[in-house]
Length: 168
Image (cartoon, rainbow, N blue to C red; front, top):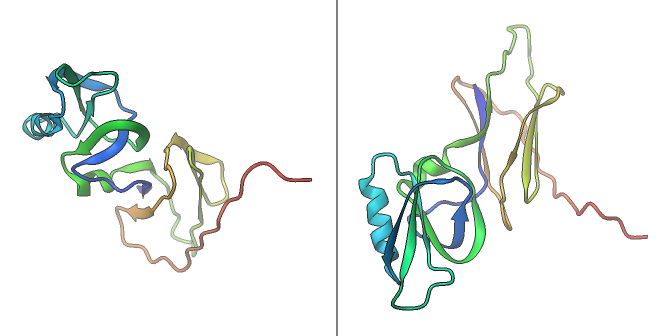
């Protein structure tokens, strides 16, 4: 198995962000009390991430806590507060993985990864895309390549991608 992880920096508390995954449990919490939401995630076995949604709520009214199972890239969402139960685990969850057969006679293995602010694609040995996924990397991204076997990375190169529009 080989994969690509990264994209966003995860933390216990993340401001102006939410997650793509659907919540498994929503419940009301007091306005301004996002720590109750974080504590509920810490206590729930199946919770990996949480979002405190205070959008369109006036002070004194209840807000919504969303507990989420699984991991996804955070997306910009002004006013929301989100977080992960275990930021290190979230950072190392692969968003692109696949089993790749490497034959013993192969001396080199080529992997090409293309990431923009919305999608990531990974190609092995010049072949078709293994996967295309939504990543929503916002302004910057970090990447980590990993395998379940020992490898030596001889060369890694990154290029800046320009916009898709050309000027006359």
